[in-house]
Image (tube, rainbow, N blue to C red):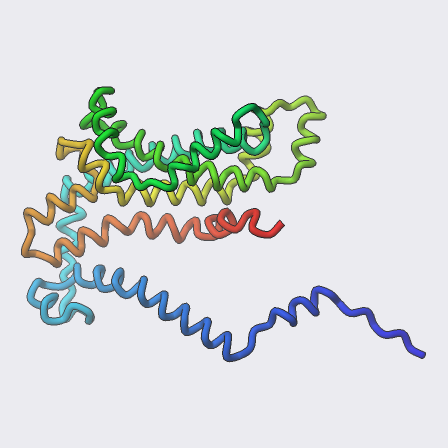
Length: 290
């Protein structure tokens, strides 16, 4: 009597998860529809910047009959555009750096250090996720004014960091808690303390979650409108969301120029997102399956 060949569990599990042709078709169609909903407005905006105003009104969704490269060229050679992009980059860069620094250190403490009131303090940080930033604009404006930070970059950066800490600490803490505990034990046996373990072991292994939190903070700061509007008065310090408001006031009838301006200002976030999307997916799914 011949012995039956052992069943490969991985093959069985894989075949059990195999989708039917109808389900695959449904998923592909759904993804195409969602991609179209996202891509078509971006593509329409970019193409609209290459048209004349008359063609934009008569043919808003089609290809330009004659490509108006000067629309983009005039913006790219404008000093105001680069000033506003520099302001946005400075504010977003400071926000990302401080958010990553403070959130990672706090999350590491909550994940590995037990002290009296740690759960209460963690929940205190997470309560901030329940309230939008707009609800705190008035007391925040008063506090920033009392600190003498009105019409400064720090008057925008510090509130953005504060509002971003809750979600960032949550993501970092979940990632740190799922690192192999053997690494922690081995580091302590070798004489490493908490600080050395954090800088030399935890952070180098946390590139996916660093990329995830960094992109979330960057996009949130880059697109922020309310905080700069309340805190900044000088046009020389305006980031691009406020700059486009001024730009629209000057070119209220030239919608093709406004669309070109919008395309050039959102392009950096699209490039950064696509460059780091692999790390973002890995960071968001870390700890989902243990």
